[in-house]
Image (cartoon, rainbow, N blue to C red):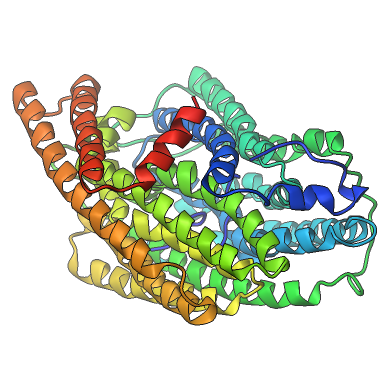
Length: 576
């Protein structure tokens, strides 16, 4: 499975740093951030980003909990809003998201060595992106009914399609502002200023939560078992309008740090003579990867809609559909966003600088370092979500839909380490302006997920389709990573593959022991409480079993002498 913002081939991920000089002040500031040393330098940058991501993702979870309160986790209202509200993300990723994230930083770092410090290049690039996004957004608004039909498939009838289309018309302007946010943020990243890009989504979430609070005050709460069966025009305007307003503020708030860095934009049309040819090649391959990935997402969404048509669950809750899948993804992606995105964003700029200066050995060492650091944290995160997915779902979203969300999260978490590692490996290619090889990784990942999605639809009970889709995603991530690693080794030579493999063997051993211990603790607490009857019981299970998983995992890493644990713990101490 591929989700709109989950594809490692791109995405509007939220990225960390120090102040630097104006964009047109010369090459020094752009090169200053990537330079310097090893784990400590990477930890400083990624800690700033992780702090912003933590606040943003926590607020994102709060927003999701409040959204479930407002429209439910299941039912027509929840599913139509989820499908429509994801279309801007999908369209943005398909048209520009992954392309911009893949090519902007290496190109801006190189342009910063021009006599004007890259100002003309950045001016032309921003002009091109803004104009292109305006056109794309206008076309999407005209094609809103077709886009809804594409992602909903044939399972929905006229009322559901009309409702989703009405929501889509309110949220599709987000396409333009997602693009503006990305291009402005990547200008900041290339200058070594990472923090604003990562903290801007906090404003988005605050605006959205405020809008949802007003919605609940005016219209009340949804039924936790069946959700809302419909949304009126006033409800749509408030829900979708504030969602779009949040994205607008997320983009425009970046103008403040850009002005402080001395950035000024002079509209310049035309791209000849500014070195975009190589970027265009990478962009085409990246676009192909996103196209493949999003084709898989279409199939996934339609499969989830199909699953929502099944009979109600034994507890009376409506059958899980795309909304449950979306909420599960938010839980699944949290550790990836906190660790992988933060580490890789800092590493990507440094990789681009090393490769630009011909330091291939340093670039390979950075990839090895990133894979090892990500392995330590992502495997622990996956273990915790697999063991505690159910209780976490009930804790955050209540019993009405919470159990289904938790089970789906656990299924997705099986592939979390592969997903985070694939995200890093692809950035290693993009830093070399190589879009062809990561395309093959995406192709294998999407093909594997799509094949298993078909199996899920044909074999799995409708009530459990969304959990099966989570397993399909995990298998796709694993297949894509293996493909990408083989291609990276053939392209760049050894990146300490044996060392990385040894690390992961020890980490997986630690995870197996910690997972069994956590499962035993969870079972024991549930036996004492006679099951998870509500949020208090779920909280008790999460606290006790979660602590057991973390403690046993850390002890096992100590016993097996995983030195990268010290690097991670040092980063945590610096971030306090």
